[in-house]
Length: 246
Image (cartoon, rainbow, N blue to C red; front, side, top):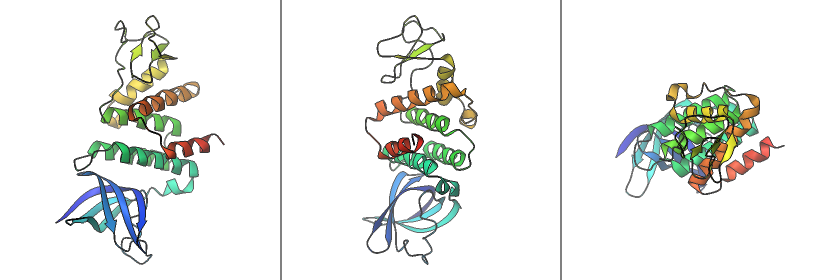
């Protein structure tokens, strides 16, 4: 059986002499693994369209034991990611998060939309990388069912004080009177940014602006919360951190 769907290449594993085993995020079937026969050969029709971050309309043949890429109508390669090692590291972290978190054998349109937009802003220098990373992490946490509880103080229901206290392990928010065990103090601007990340309409999410002093705080809270939810380490994140700390 053959089927077609929009997809982006998240990971490539070389197999045999010239084949590629692709891990893709697809619009209709979530995470999918498929072989691209002889795609490692420069003259093969699939060579250019099955590279990392290639996005397009893929046609697959689904066999009894495996799925194969038949053809691809390529739409985007995110070329700008290949020109900067720090951008590339962050993009690979996004990919690894999707492999870990996106559904399998089911519709994944919101996951694909989040990844494609994030890669676009990253590749084209449209957004501060630290803000972009934090937006991605909090939105992804919400997609997988772990939206942090940011509406009001978990203790008394107070909507906002300055500062507020956020527990990166539980996702709970507290006012300056309740504080909460294990919660760290964050300026109100950071809490507002976090609320924007999870509650805003998708088309408005990337419009977020933040003062320079609070960008690291926003990034810290977002990363710590997502890592507490997923509960595993990511080599791509470690590599990205070595890039930004150089």
